[in-house]
Image (cartoon, rainbow, N blue to C red):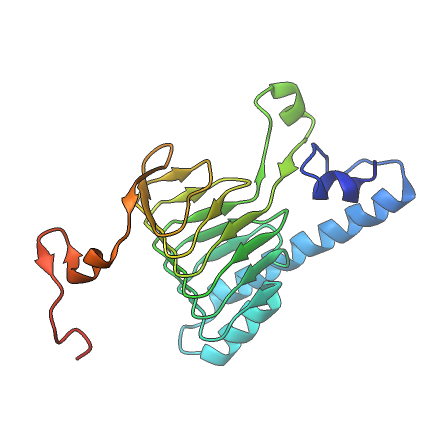
Length: 213
């Protein structure tokens, strides 16, 4: 099985040291992509907030796709960038970390609080694999309208359904259905989000009628 096939199928792989010429070409391409992501992320994180156009251009270069009206506070860090596909009106607060050795898909109107980590890649428990540089990558998908609370970590293979909210400090190890409030380590669904939630800012505090100004 080729290196490309091992990566795409979620099997163990090592990114370097292959004898096959085709695998060695892919190694070189992966190294180029990783280096490019580091350069672009560094440039974005070093650019003044007032230079809006430059920051937007850098985001479009960094990611495989990023939609209209997206905004990332920075700093942001990516393994590859080119494997991440983000929808419109995305917002990320400080210290967004994306480990995207495989495909990461983020929908429209997604919000990330500070210190969110989205990880497509992991390592086996047995140390001999890790010591040899082995890893696996399984796609992650974040639906539309999702809010990820501060210090949330989303792990490989997870899908989060539309409009769900992940509470602060959660580690999401398995998929979360749409319209759910989920929290914890590991993250678990607490309840569904319903029409009644439209009446409240938070528990005991009703939505003020003039919230639009």
